[in-house]
Length: 251
Image 1 (cartoon, rainbow, N blue to C red):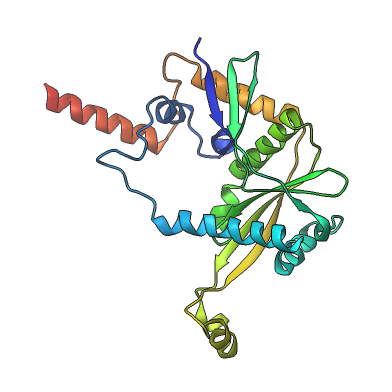
Image 2: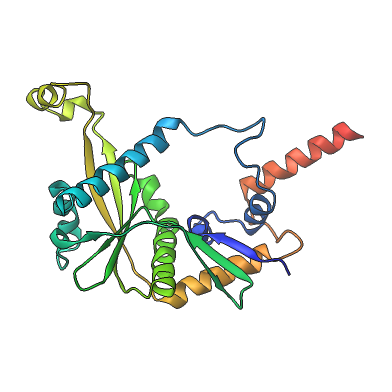
């Protein structure tokens, strides 16, 4: 049986309300990637902004020895029992770990890892978005993703993880919400855009929670044939309509 590889970003798909095993099987078995004629590339500004956020926070922590004050304040409100003034930077690498008797490999790379003086780790994921109902609906997906990072840290680095969080950076695009003096000060030297930081705590689960998710995903992807689709699944209907269309054109 071929090895099944699971990305931490995909692990929580099975927890979403609209999850369909059949659609999941097809999209993972026959990935189109980005370089195909029908691709709709993500705007470059999104990935550039993500890289910029990481550099801003990491540079501040490495050069000054502390996180930016605005980030410490946001974290303190959500995690009052933790002192983020004394954390240190942890170099980010892509981890992978074999489980289920080496039949499955879980892989992932966190956006941010900070270490407290006692050696415990805190793991965060950055989001360039507003904390909206749509994002709340995706919380199970992010919860599994961050817990997968924690699992990898525990298994590969033998580190205790004390907390997980989503950190949202919402562009302050609503100029009515920003007073004139702030706008003038912000754009004094060059055109600049402000961001509002929101920290969303994520539940930290025991290791067997991640292992059970991996086992469920493995059971789907290791199947040689497509699983049964979810009743009323729009994705399955689109796939069926497409198949009927090409079948008619080929006859």
